[in-house]
Length: 84
Image (cartoon, rainbow, N blue to C red; front, top):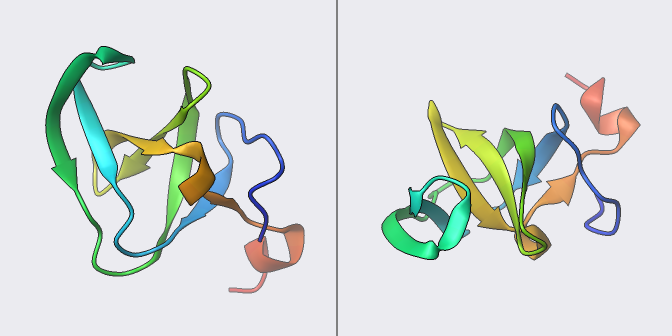
């Protein structure tokens, strides 16, 4: 897994446990303020929905759209995608 590659919409990523997930008042605008946050208790795979500024990725987690700081999200390598 690697955090160096830039992820794009549709990529699968690895989300470690206790990572800060945020929802903003205006979905793609961090300047609008945080309205909700959570810290997943277990690591999991998530779907990347796109980028929010240079700081965040938008992801799908448990049926909701969340922002996660880019440095917390890990790209899955090709071998890991086909391991299951």
